Length: 423
Image (cartoon, rainbow, N blue to C red; front, side, top):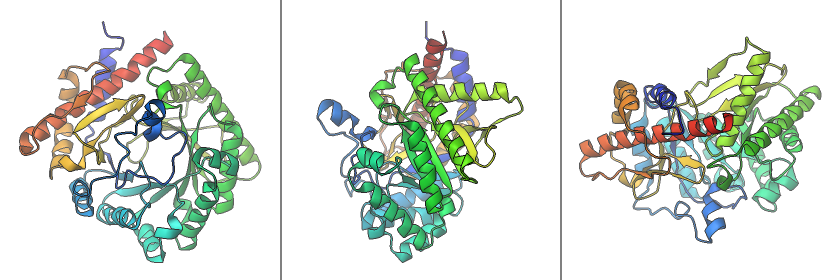
């Protein structure tokens, strides 16, 4: 007998899949100038001593600006949000110009979001490029882990000052501070979450930054089968973050959008956030859980803040939250889960024009039927697309089928954890 509730898993997956595609991530570069303590890319190397297969130089024959632009064109009109996450998009002149070219191609119909550590911004983002960034990229997230000592402990000595200089460089050249988010990983095992959150709000206020995001996270090896203790640690962490935000609010910091974010890197954090949402709703029955504008997550606006807009936000691998394809530069073709970190991958070396319109159309037409009829894979099964890419019709159909299987696998995985921890 399965450990999950099959009806719940299929219902949740059906709601997700029948929406079609809502967002996509295009990884324009999978290298970085930093080696942060919590980065999942380095986890296998830390555990085995061998470099991660993902973290390697992209072969130019497999990835080019032309390919990235063709993918962006294939996505046009299908998704609300295009994100450039993972490694450092502003690592080099080539990577920077590719990111900006993708932004130009995508921004006509989609909102654009780029994640950066900002340390190299003064080198590669000159006045012309910042002007282009301002015109095409609606959201810019900069990774700041807290005050100088904590940030440098996690991201390397000197990188706090480099990141702050990078933010100042970008805003001095015209990128609006209200469109920047300071993004921080809340790691209970590393630091005082109260001080971390408060420092972030002070930094944002000093730099006239409009948003802050706190992503709840436990290192990957702890998350595949989280314990009740993991969940409790996260719940305690959230309380400390709320306390820090209350202090910031009481000292006059206001009008900022604050996200407390739980994502699939840490199922324990997702469970803890959902527990916090339920408790708040019980105290404030009129509060509503809503989808964000891009339908990529759901959130509850914290009803006990007045000057700050604080949202508890839950991303994929949870009930009624869309799963989205992540376009990356890895091979062979696969959709897989490693440790507790889950990532959808469509390797651009094997991408075929027309894949995304096919996926969107068929998910909308057949998503519910596929979610109800497809066998649910074992949680340890590695899901792969084995069809020959020279036959697009067969390849597209298998990619659709395997994507649905992966969605079911993810929801069954979290449903199992919910059942076990709540039993």
